[in-house]
Image 1 (tube, rainbow, N blue to C red):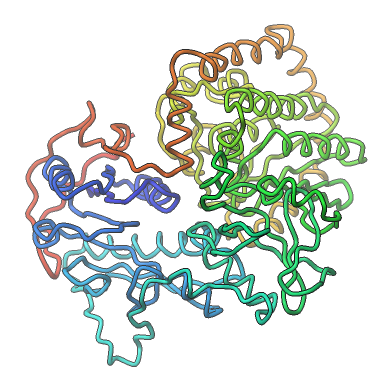
Image 2 (cartoon, rainbow, N blue to C red; image 1 turned 135 degrees about the vertical axis):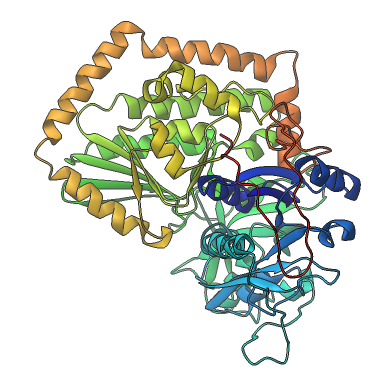
Length: 586
C-alpha cells in the first residue's frame, strides 16, 4: 500500500515505522505536520491508501479524515485518551500498558479501534520505554491494523466506555505540578518515578543551588543518605541528592533562564552546569556509565551514554577503559554500548555550550577518531560491536571499526551525516564503509539520508548477525553468542587473517591518510565560510521546528515522485476497493 506518515517530527517511532513498513513492501512517504494546507497538498500529491500518524500534536484536517483512512497511533491502552498517556502510566507505576491504533475523527483518541496491543512496562525512563516496548507494540499494532485495511471486510470497533473490557479513561495533560518533588516527603522510588515519567521531555521542574532547572537521567544512589534535598556528592558528571529515605544520582539537567545564558535551555551533565558549586562536593562511586564484565574468554564493555552522545571527555574515558580491556586475557571482546543507544556520535549539546563550538567540535571528533583507531588496530582478539539500541552518524562507523557487528531486531541505524548541515564526518568512515559495501555503495548510503533497519543492514553488509530477541534480553543472547565464538576452533585463524588484512590495507593506504583527508573536509565544516553545520546543530539542540519536510523524506515532492492511479476513498469502515500494490521503493 501507499502509506503517508504524517508526523510532528521524524522521531524514533516514526523512523522505526518507516523502516518496518518498507521492509513489509509498502511504499512510504513522510510529511511533517506543519500546517493544514501543507498536509492537504501532501495527500493530494501522494494519494495514499492510508494516512498513518505516529506522533501528532494537532488534529488531522477534517476534509482528510472524512475522505481517507487515517490511523492514529496512541501510546495507551484501549479507552485511554489524552496527550500524556505514557506519563501517567509511569507515574502510577503501571506494570502493564499497551498501544492502540484508532481511526481519526473529530474527538481526540476516541475513534474506532483498528488494533490494540498490550505491552509490559519496566521501571525505566519514558524515553527508554517509548523507544523499546512501546515501539515494538506499535509495530505489531500498525501491521495488524494495515492487514485489516487490506482485507477490506473487517469493521473497526467503536470504544464503549461502559464496556468492562475497556480499562482506559480520559486523562488531562500531565503538568509540571503533577510531578513536583517534595524532597522532605518523597522516598527514592517516588522521586525516580517522577523524573523517569518526564525523561526525555519535559523534565521535572526543580531547583538546584538556588537555580531553576529541569531534571533528567535519574538513578538510585546506593549507600548515600543525608538531609532530604541536600546535595551529597558528585561522580562522573552526575550529582547526588538526598531523598527522604536515601538518595538519587541526577545525571543531566537543563537550566531555565538565569545568569548562565550560554547554557540555558541546553540539556547537559549536571556537574557541567554547576561546575563551581559541585567542586565543593566530595566524590563518591555509583554513577558508572562505563562498565566491564568478564566471563572466561569473553569480555563485555558496556557504555550507557545519555541519548547516545559521546563528548571528548567520555571518548577519552572509554578509550582508557578499552585499553584496560586489552590487558585482559580474553579472546573475544564485546562492545555492548547501552541498552537504548549504541552511540549517536559527537555530543552536540556540549559542543553548543562551549565557548567555541568549532573548537569543541574539533576536539570531540579527534577524541572519537582516537577511540575508533584503537578498535581498528586491535590485532590479538576479535572485537564485536553488539548493538542493543540505535546508532547514528559517527556512532555507526565507530561500530564498523569492530570485526563483526551484531544487532538486536528492531534497532534503527542512520549511517550518514548529511542531516547535520552537510557534515562530512570522520571516524575513518572512508576506510570502514567501502570495505563492507564497496565504493559506490558507500557513496549511495552517505547521500541517502534515510534510516535503515537491521534486516536491510544485514543484506547490505553493515550488520553481520541479527539477534532475534527482545532488547531487554539482549545481553544474555549476546553473551551466549560471544562464548560460542570464543569456543570456535577457527578463532585463531580468523584473528591471524584479520592481522594480515590490516597489514595489507595499511600498505595500500595508511590509516592516518584516511583520517587526515576526513579532517581536512571537517575543518571546513567547523571553521569555513559555510555555517550550515552550526545552524543545523543549533536547530537540532533547541528543537527548532522545520518549515518544510526535507525532500528525502517527502518522496511525493522529490524528483522520485510518481502520481499513482486514482484510488477509491472511504470513510468509517474500510472499503478500499482494489489497493494499489506498487513495488517497494528503494
